[in-house]
Image (cartoon, rainbow, N blue to C red):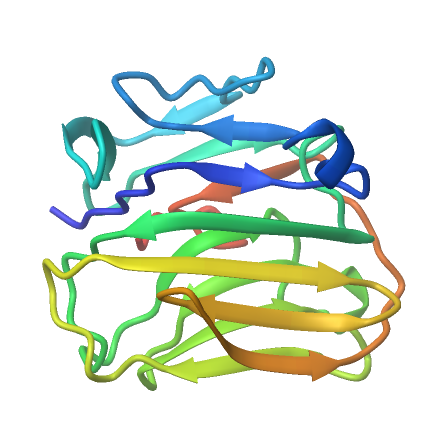
Length: 196
């Protein structure tokens, strides 16, 4: 069983600092978040286990949650932050999706948002564009069962950043044309494969 154990997932829009998150998912016994974030669908089995604080979501291999993008995932600017206790080592040679738009990642014009652990042992944040804007952080030393706090931020006029365990680990200046998609996955990739 692979585990994606976020304490709280926050998808933040432009006014996040004045008005709070657009979606908070504590995963403390429920996959429904606030204010009103309920998955459109769940694929595969999941359970709740002891988390960093309270409970956390545990996704089995092939499992993921799908949410509506409108009003929850702002591609022009936003951020996500959560605790992760992976059931895999950072150098396992596998891809592991954490958050992804449901769109064609291979087409750079689709502006797919994708936060994932790449098979090369790098944590990677993509916002696909012709400039191929992405940032990476080496996580090859990660061991299964260890907690890590992850954060990612993006802005169409400023660029991307990745945060690991409270530190800004990678940043890249970039611009892109934001393109929204109807749905996004937690624990699944852009093509609908649960790989968390």
